[in-house]
Image (cartoon, rainbow, N blue to C red):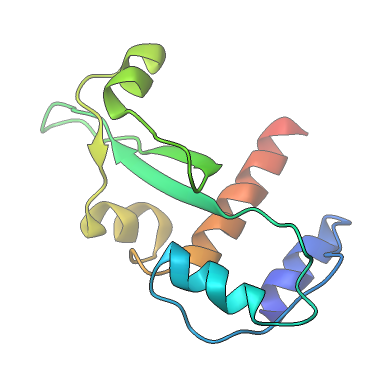
Length: 124
C-alpha cells in the first residue's frame, strides 16, 4: 500500500483516508470488510476493473480494452464492442493480463492504480 500511496503522492493526489481491513474474495465481502472499519467513510462506492480482449487475427497483437465502472453497473461486451468498433470482446485471459500488465486476475489494487495512472498520463 505504501508504494501506491507514494505513486499517487507523486501525482499530487492524497487520499482523504486509508483503512486496513481483512482480506476479501468478492465485492460483497470487500464492502462488508470496509464497513466493519470505524474510520471508513459512511458513504463510498466500489469500482470494478474489467479487461477485455477483442477478436484479432492470430498474427496481430491484441490490444486490451480496460473498463473502470461502478461495481453495480452491468457492462455489455457486445455494446461496448459496437461503440469502439471492435469485434467479439471477451474477458481477457490470465495470459493476456500477465503479458500486458504483469498481473494476475487477483491483482485488483495494482491493476486499478496502474490504469488510473495511465489515464492521468493520457488526460494530461
